[in-house]
Image (cartoon, rainbow, N blue to C red; front, side, top):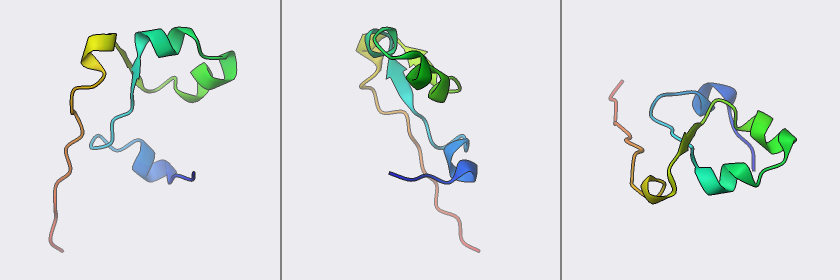
Length: 56
């Protein structure tokens, strides 16, 4: 899986890591996800991403 750095840090894109998953991650995985929100397990499945269409 690839990603574009400019896309990854856009406010419309949200990677939310459940607290129980974050606790079991390796140090490398935690460093890769350091800019993403760690949320409670019951809030992890709530839809948060919002995409807008722009006409150019």
